[in-house]
Image (cartoon, rainbow, N blue to C red; front, side, top):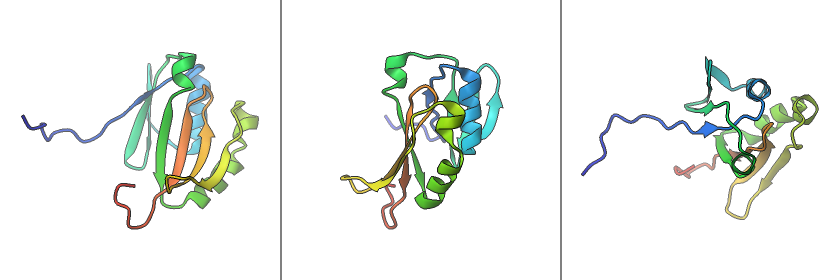
Length: 128
């Protein structure tokens, strides 16, 4: 049976130990607030995620998100300028480095431990 064609996007739910701090973190990164209520929906590019008022340490610290960007160096300069550890008490971001699987990646931790992989999109690699 074929999948119906009305689907257009997926939005994962992310945890928030302190909802207001997490919202401020994502706003500082430059994600657009699409909804702010019992949950918050943030968008970046064509993607979005739902920040919820729920936290479970084991889940949060094992949750990872990937953000594909065209200019990782520009994103890294933006991330560094934000002083995320000083403002939000997060682990220090890790600078871009080429990973064994072929992507250049910088790592950013959110206030409850979600690990973001900010990756340079490779030219000629449509799967990126």
